[in-house]
Amino acid sequence: MALKEVLPTPPRGTRWSLTRREDDVTLTLRARGPRRRVLATWSTEAFSELTPDPVTALMDVATQVAARFDRRLVAAA
Image (cartoon, rainbow, N blue to C red; front, side):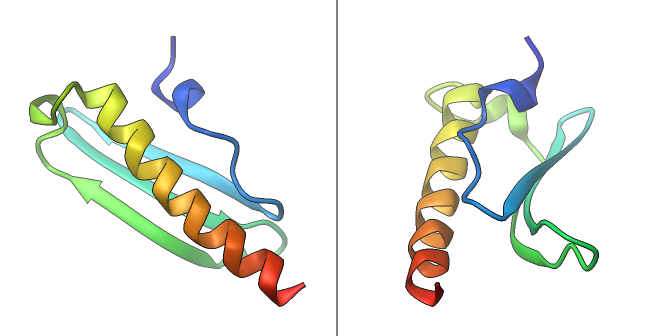
């Protein structure tokens, strides 16, 4: 399973961008459309050391980011 497949569904009008180089991981939430503005970024240089396990930790971060921006996008609509 690819790491990106475990991410929660992004808020409407956004998409996830996930970059991994060895143990460096960067998770970015971008707006869809021609400008693709960055809404949030999270990164770590020690992905394999995250607890309780790296995939669960990444899902937790993504869920928190998505929830934060989902509320903001709904409030703006």
